[in-house]
Image (tube, rainbow, N blue to C red; front, side, top):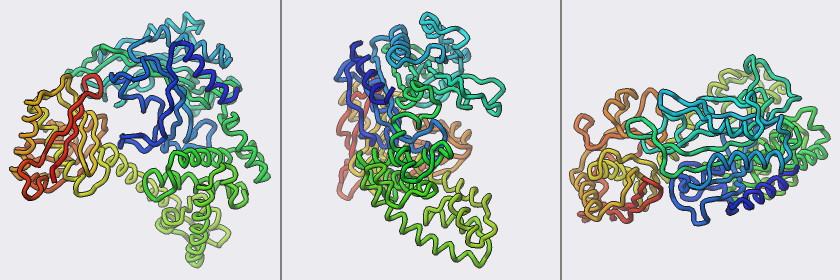
Length: 586
């Protein structure tokens, strides 16, 4: 079955069951600085899953285009792709397990035509320490549909629990979450690889099983004492990989043999004179990367040196390199992907490669290539290790410090990842002077809210630009004008006091002992950065944070401005979550 047929059948199936078909969101998230791209079907719907009413009703369905940059290096096997479509259906405090699971089973077995004998189920094992029960109900529903008990497996919270923060123990107070039930297709022709364990099972990584859908039952909320209670409104969040369901429909463990990729792969075969089955890896990389680059370009993301643009540039240049290994004629990637942006970027990259080849010539007389020199070729000219090894032998370079290169690359990736996480998880649009001032004001505001409303107030989101700050926080009631005035006064008083803003590096356990405020959903290393407003021993506020901040709170006030901090808006964004937007008067 083709991807278009499956998508159409899915949307029609749930429309017939009272769901409104909603348009998919952009690959570039709107008003969300925490991530570069839309990476799942539920991501644009998160406010509604957390309690906000959706204008199109309580039953929704769509097909969402998604991109996951972290999968770039994984592409080349039979299942990983960077760009994919996710089929979704949602119940916002409407139906629950007894409707969702039979519908999913009916769609997969009757509409798509998957063999019942090939489908396996996983359910939540439960967590007795936290009082979270085993999901017997889902298992019994699956049994009633004809799934034998031996094809239903139970797993712990690492596999069959969903929350924004991860496992139940990682969830902060006020965070919703719940167990999930996943459905896997078994490719019986694929042999188990014992390096992944003595027994094959649905969550085995050997390739015999492929997850094709996941129903999340969001019904719990974490209490302030660490226990779990039931949400007053419970939701269903289903996500199914369109390309993966298509692969199951043709009984192929290779998603690249579906019609989502085969036309491109056949074109690569014609242009290269090589066959896919002889060496599929470079075919898969070129097919995936050109497809993803085309979709991102259509969403307005063009090749560049930073952030989203850098990801597109990396996709195209990686496709060029692997296209060259296949012998693809120069300039044909744009023809394959039908994208002029790819043609322009390929031209720029080939000029860079030409300069890199001249640079490589400098090392011929040495007879060896150090880790530092190899890394320079990689970072400056885009030469990956495999390309360096392929050129160097022909030019008389006998030794390359491969291990040293890999260590430098690993360190570079760790720094990049840390920088990206700090920037986007922190919610800062940039590191400009105005954004820095508002970031410092954000610390004062959170503490002031806790003083006025109570210690239950915790940050649940943040977005800070040069013009204003925005904070989402846990609180169940609308703030009164008197409370808003008190909060503003506390912040303005602390600005007038011109307190020092101090950064201290310490052990994680010491920061936790100080009860420093933690970023929502963050995982911290053994040593952390902590910012205190006022000296650490007598601080007004203490938070885990990487900066940037002003050196003193007095810097938040412009000359001649007596009351610099002003709350512009206070509103609800979800059940138990309020939002404040505030500014610093210039």
